[in-house]
Amino acid sequence: MPRYSWVKDDEHVEHFDSKEEMEAAKRKDSNEVAGCILAVVGFVGGGLISYALLKHFGLMEWPKWARFTWVATGAVSTAYVLARLAGLIKILVGLALLGGMVTWIVRLIWDNV
Image (cartoon, rainbow, N blue to C red; front, side, top):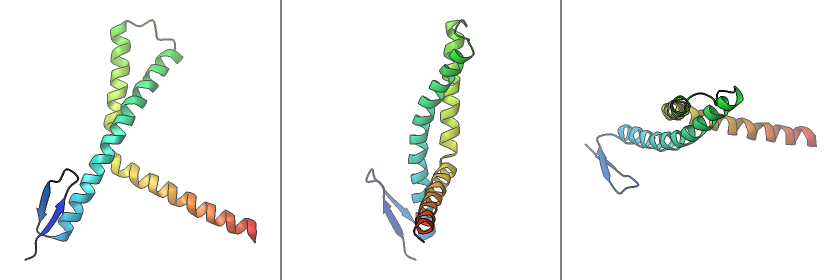
């Protein structure tokens, strides 16, 4: 029975019994990287949005511990949600890019015919 191997970016070698298992591991690794990137973006974005909401609704007179808790909770929860939805977000971004390309091609043909 053939064995399949894959060398990860950190030069760690993983061995698999089937090609399907190897492909699934590659997809999982790709989703983990996307999840980390989206977690950082979500942490910064969630913190900024939480702070902006505090300012917008005039809640800056809250005690410092309450404002800190509000911003930290917003940042952490947004990071968690985006990291968990990394696979879905990758698919949606890909579909949006594909839709944009198709729209651009159709519009190019439409304008020149």
